[in-house]
Length: 249
Picture 1: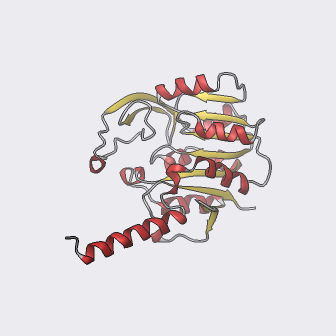
Picture 2: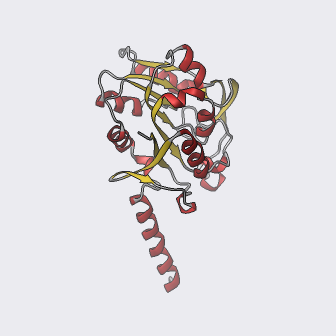
Picture 3: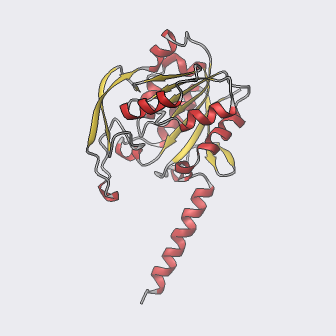
């Protein structure tokens, strides 16, 4: 027979999960349409240039393309299986450029780890997902660049309307490699979740970086973007959550 205390705590956990999701905590795993909608709602002009770092198989880029048919999009994806899928998917779209590389703090070579080739869990850190019974045994060598070099040499230091970052715990590394490009960017959408446990990075780090760079942070929720006016430890939720850093006007 189930004891009353267990029933009570099971109920509290369900309420907790529901309340967290309504705040956007854990909402990010199912929210590409809402992510794009929230980002577009915050942009102060019709976007002309977007960068998708961690493009996977192109769902985010496709959602942007559907919303803005003339938008120029530069996609970065290191997994060879996904690069092939991206090139096949967007081969007829000259305004989408596929870059088969990772973006990080320093240029060089690295190992991409995952549970299987092309997985959305792929990370430059070998994650420990034993508690989820997910082995992390697949790997491949990849090229890593600093984004500021690409911005200078390829984008010719043009203003960027939107950068999307979904690189499984290495978002801060990519931001550190942006240099002056971050100052030319209007909005950065980034993912935060379980991979940040493995990379030992925290939401507090993003608040510090973006605060110094002149951005406000918004959390994407099922009903739109919520501006977070200050950092709170209670916002350190390691379930997949998406945020938008918007440059202050």
